[in-house]
Length: 157
Image 1 (tube, rainbow, N blue to C red):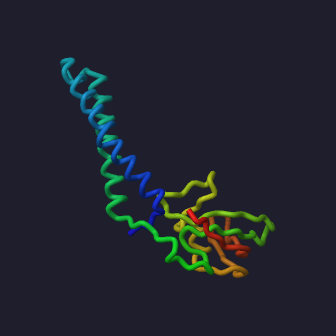
Image 2: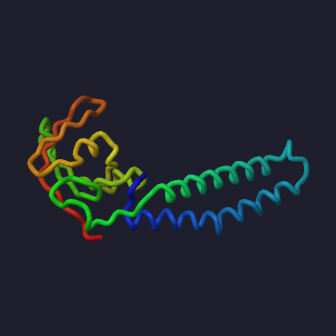
């Protein structure tokens, strides 16, 4: 079971609808057109159309499974005093005194450039459940990071 924000759930549903209603019919038409051009064994257009069809079907099936096994998070039901899904966490790396701020999200919403880390990442997993002032230890490829929680906030989105 994966938990998604309402926004991300709607984005995935919209992408799925676009693939089913717009993209797949076009891919199907392209395949029929390439198939009608004759010998399939020596038809690069046909092979490309088949690859596009397989890629589109694969993406549709993946998104269907994501939605099937996901639930939308009710932000009002989440604890506000500890790090959890949808928390914005500011923390200090105790080894370097560098301060960082990330939002903890599901793996399907992760975007490092936007400051969103997965709760399943080493840092995200280490921060989960911690309160302000507590130290989290994250096992990362370069060793163990010691992180002090400075603040926990939520966006009222």
